Length: 168
Image (tube, rainbow, N blue to C red; front, top):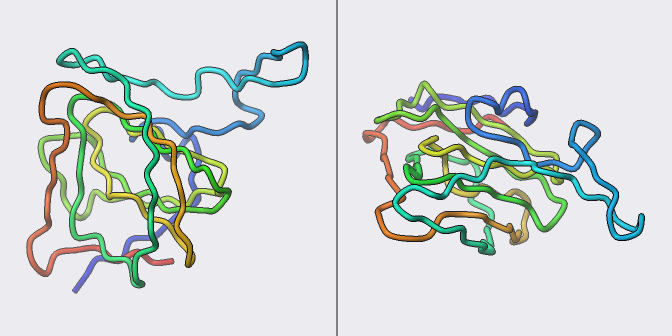
């Protein structure tokens, strides 16, 4: 029987064990720039890509909705750097994460619903499920990732019969 995983609203506090929420809101440090015609929401995530002479990558990922119910059958992590997902559409998406470590168990999973204007930056080594978009349409995300030498993606597949199902 699959484990039901409750999806809770994404906040800075409940996501803190996994990284940072990227959000232009009243809690962010702001700087007025461009002669007062723009506001800079400053230093929203701790980008860490320097391991093994890494370099920052800027990518666009285009995610497609998965069939319901959403089954969590695997997790991945990036041991050499952080990975940030910033939505380019104002549509909610789901984040599933588990603490960094050598392995991940199905009972360690936490799931969060974004409000459509929030992004996330997974800390180095944090386990997470791949991109989960909702609705019927594709969604684009600006992704800040690590490039360079070394294997920066570990995948863990749960044993057959051991998986989670998101409770939406």
